[in-house]
Image (cartoon, rainbow, N blue to C red):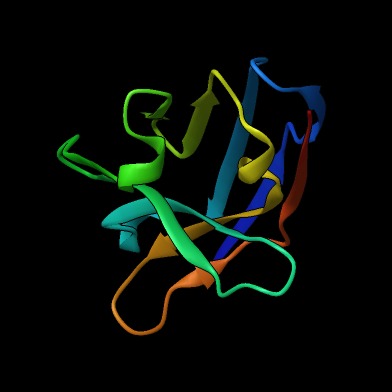
Length: 113
């Protein structure tokens, strides 16, 4: 099994930056991709960015050019710049393995206007 622990959320003003981190432990050899999702109040969870083992990345249109997903061995980072109030959400890390993905506990990001 894989365990994920996120960190780095917080309160920031619009236009500011934050860096989220997700540390994977356990059966990390089974991970073929890591991703960040987010869920705003009253909305469905949505994909923000993914990074595969080979380094390929994918971003939601809403964050392209502002967010960067990076991976350092078993840690995935999400660098967020030019933050907007609509980026406010709980951000979840996900590890894709054979079968159902593993989720972290989430970290709150709040962007004030």
